[in-house]
Image (cartoon, rainbow, N blue to C red):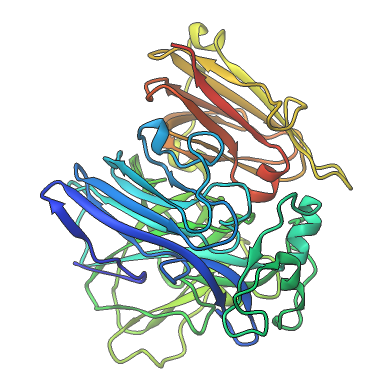
Length: 478
C-alpha cells in the first residue's frame, strides 16, 4: 500500500508500543498560489502540519514546542483521551507561550482518521496550525493506494478582524526576509501584504470571511501534487475539511465514491454517492476503483470565483500532463452525502428516560451588525453547562435559529447522531462533529458519559462562531 499526499514525519519508537513525535510551531510566509502571500504559522514548517500516524493500540508521546508570539495549544480532535491531554488552553492546560513546550502523551483512541489543531482562541488554526492524524485500524478494508487530503482555505485577514470585531490580543507574526524581520508585527499588517487580485469581498452564501486562496495539502490547483494511481487499483481517500468556516462538497470526475467512515468511525452500512458534503472539522473515508487510464480532477466546490483552486489531479502513468476530466461546478442533480442517506430513515426517538434527561440547546445570534453567536441566549463563558454523571446516557438536542449552518463538535467523546431535521435515523452515525442546518434545523446526539472526569468543550467549529461565544462544556459531576 502506498500512502501519500501529505508530508509524513518519521516516527522514532522509544519502545515497541510508544511512538515519539516532535511538533514545533513557527512563523512562515505561506504562498499557495501565484501572487498570494500570507503571514502564517506552521507546524514543522508545513501547512498542513505533518501527517502523524500510529497503529491502533500504540501510545504516542508528542513534544510540542512553540516559537510563535501568540499563546497556543494542540487539541487532538476526535480522540478519546485523558482530559489533561485534550489540549484546550485556559481549560485543560495553560497555554504554551513563545519558547515554551508541553508534552502530550496518550493512547490514541478510537482508530480512524483524526486531526490536530491549535485551540488557544487566538486564531492559530486560521493561520495554519493544523494537520491530520491517522490511527490505523488493521481491520479496515485494504487498498492499493491511500491518500490523505486536507482541504483548507487562506482568509483575507481584514475580513476575519471585521467578523470578530478585532482581537483583544491580536495575533502577531514575524515575517522572515521582510524589513521587519525579527520584530513582532500585529496581524493588521497582513492587510498590506501582496495578495491575489480579483478577490470577492465575501462568500455569496453569506460567509462572514473572504478568502484569498483555497487549497488542498498546502497548494492551490494547478500547483497541487497529483495523486498517481494504476488501472485496477482500489484507492482510499482520507478527506478532512479544515476550512475555518466553509462546508465543502467534493467530487471526483467520472467516479462514484464509496463512503465507509464518518469522522474516522466505520459506517454500519457503506454508502455510494457522487459527492461528499463535509462540514468544518468533519472527515470522510472513501474508496473508488481505477477502471481506465487517464487524468481526473478531484475538486472541492466553493461558492466564489476561486472555485477552480481547490482541486487535485488523479492520474495514471503517462497521463500526468493530460488535461483532466472535470466535474460541473454546481450541485444540480448531484447525489451528495447526507446524514439521512447514510443513516437511513425510520428510526425511533429515544426512550422516555433519555427524553427526560435531554439537554436542549438553541443556537442563535449572528444578527446583522452583531459579533455574538449564542447558545440558549448566552455567550461563552456564560453559556449553560451540561452537567452529567459518569455512566449516564445523555441526549443533546440542537435547534438552529440562525441563517447559517453550525458544525457542532464535542471533545473527548464519540456521539451517535440519531436525528436530523425531524428525521430519526435507523442507523445512528458515530461522529464527533455534525452540521446543524440553518433556519430552524435540528439535530439530536446521544452519547454515554464514559470519558475521564473533567471539562469537555462543546462548540461550533466555525472559528468565527466559536470566537463569538457559541461554546459550552460537558462537565462530569461524579
